[in-house]
Image (cartoon, rainbow, N blue to C red; front, top):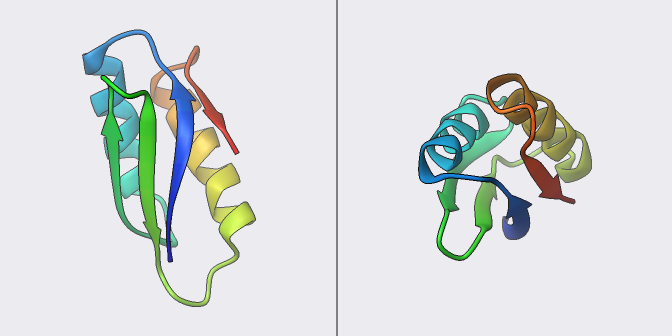
Length: 72
């Protein structure tokens, strides 16, 4: 399953950090962040709860960029 989320991030470098953090999260098959549109597109692995995975993505992103936000 593939979903898009609105994000709030201050710079392209921070967006790149968020993308890398999301890609390393268990349950994520692929993730990309577009700084220009302020959107994160996520493809989930089969068998994972989307809400739980996105909470982990949010937590991982906050570790690398504390003032970012993902609107789940």
